[in-house]
Image (cartoon, rainbow, N blue to C red; front, top):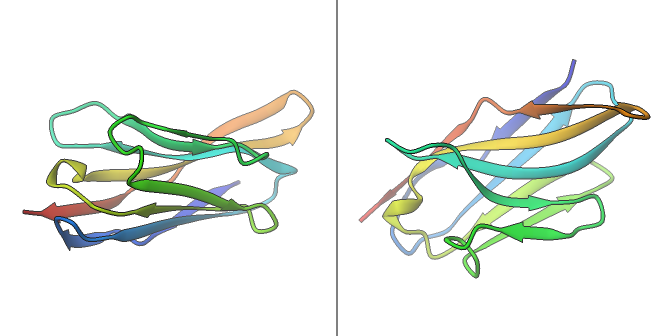
Length: 120
């Protein structure tokens, strides 16, 4: 099986920075799209940022210009640099990976989540 191991969550003050990273383990052929999603208290889970194998990036409007997503293809690691954090960024952040096993055989995997709390 495949597991996504997340790191970097914690407590920061508004205006501060934090970096989340996610590293997959297990047997697979390759990793396709990767990304980060978050779920704030009382809200649905939403997309934060995604990155393709070719490093095409997509950001939610709420984080554009403040967050940067990157990946290291050789290690299949995805990181999210979060700058100028706001209290509304407080949420549980989930790592996402679409894992390729065979041609036309891929599955979505999710990390267990890491809590980011931004104080005012």
